[in-house]
Image 1 (tube, one colour):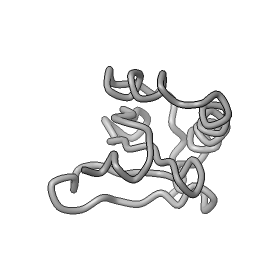
Image 2 (cartoon, rainbow, N blue to C red):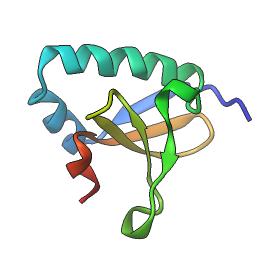
Image 3 (cartoon, rainbow, N blue to C red):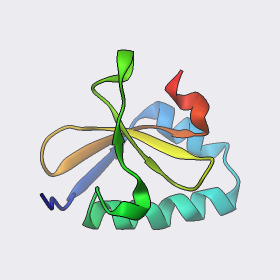
Length: 90
């Protein structure tokens, strides 16, 4: 089920969280976002559905410590909700 993402939207919370990250993490996140747009389920991203109160959301790995939390708005558009360490799930 390969679906290419044509549009990524960014929540205010995502932009605020991103603004506090080191440049190296932002560079990694940008590289992973480019992979994500081509294939949101590419294995290196470790894309996974969240559970509990976050059951509508998904996340993918930027690196071992950082994640991007997002939702699918439709088949071609996603909304990035937050970026950060595992704390974004709380």
